[in-house]
Amino acid sequence: MLGGRDVTTLSENERAEARNTDIGFVFQAFHLLPRLNLLENVEVPLTYAGIPAAERRERALDVLRRVGLEDKARNLPSQISGGQKQRVAVARALAGNPRLLLADEPTGNLDTRTGEEVMALFGELHAEGTTVVLVTHEPDIGAYAGRIIRVRDGVVESDTRQTPRRASP
Image (cartoon, rainbow, N blue to C red; front, side, top):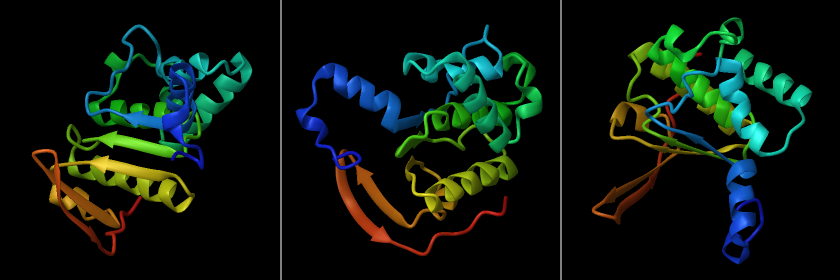
């Protein structure tokens, strides 16, 4: 179920649309397009979603502002740090206002301070109602979660709830 909808009954095209509109993806490797500036990189999924150009630009600027990179909107990915690239990747995932955010090792390439900033942002998103699923091998990052599901060799080893550590923005 995703947003009250049984996704197993959807056609291939409907599933692709759900992935584009209901799920945001944050990858460890960023996957930014090198020839596009940061604003254009954030706009890419909105283009595929058929969002009109003016609204795309507004939404992309809004999420870049939220991750503290509005002033770098015209920069190319090669002109920013690794931590900034990860924040652009987060902005791109958030641009479509997803119900579900899937983040694969989103702090793996970041220094401690920037990792905490990303985790603070994820905490804000969760508080606003976005479901955040985070994959990490780092126990200190896992401490930010309210629920930890440990998987070993494809089998759920444990499923525990905890009081999440709060990140300072």
